[in-house]
Length: 433
Ligand code: AMP
Ligand code: GLY
Image 1: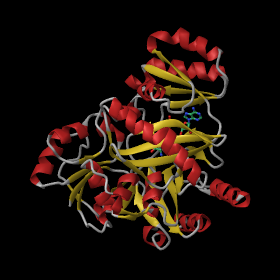
Image 2 (image 1 turned 120 degrees about the vertical axis):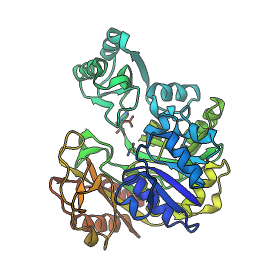
Image 3 (image 1 turned 180 degrees about the vertical axis):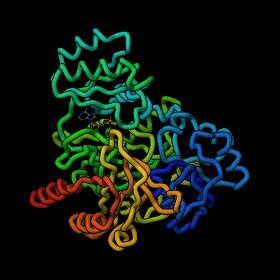
């Protein structure tokens, strides 16, 4: 099998690694890729992940069997539609199906139409500032303000006072989020614990991978601003077998069915971001692709043939025999970021210690580059993702931090508490059973 992976982050490095280790042994290419990804894949000769024309030409010349799309931007721009028109199998939803992620307003109305549990909400356009202000007066705080469109994880503000909420709304409408902020969704704040569930979908059928938990806040103790994700672990003990069954029944199955009714069947990885509130699951967000950094952990506990699984889904015939186990052991991922992220940060610092770290865990490249002298340097907000595997969650966390301590670059920042809350949950669940 000949596979092209689109993307250049830690998620794509993990996907490429898992594809490379698939028993079906695919040959791999990546666009634009990164130095870690190019340990397993070859470059395509073009660098723009939105360039459908070059991609199609490359797929034809190189007899590509499958394109796997990592990030949301190419999906929202319709890259999967362009490939399907040319009959090139692609793991990733159409532009219409990717609206579950690219428009929060669409996602909210979708959930309403199909009775999928989510927070109460109201939406306002840029011409309805006064109405939005009035509405805030009637809301409990905290209240959540979301830009409708894609905003690279920065379009969600949790306002703890009404005044903060109004100023967030004014900021969004003032153009600081570009077109993404021309419409906003104001949403009730849900108290609870978050979990992410990934469904590999072929349009009608699906299979769930191990549930994971992301750590979105920048600082230890889940404080500070939201980021793309500072760490993750899988499986997430909060998602018990009963809860997973409830998530399938009330959320995943009706979502796939709903997308068929909308004439936009979902092919790809449906990411369901959940809040578990008083034991019940609510959708906080949909994404139309694998999560980053959850994927690093989820694929670590997966056993089977990822290439065969994604290929079968892309062809509309999900092959469950490609899976031996979705949750073998435990995995923990810690993100090593540049100080300043998710705001501005400096890049270009040499990275060392990868070989030593690899004694304990995998080291995925998220934002790295090769400097002029060929040395590996930092080149992004999230720089490296360290992913461990062990027989227990406690051991996976320990291994992961052992590896983290080997890694060095200037302005390194990471959370020191990834997974620790899960240990407490696990302990409580065990005590209760
Ligand atoms: P989103 O991009 O919609 O996933 O929002 C980013 C993050 O904001 C989520 O992962 C949650 O941590 C938080 N969040 C979003 N919506 C809510 C909500 N209704 N209640 C509580 N937290 C939320
Ligand atoms: N980790 C959250 C995301 O991928 O959106």
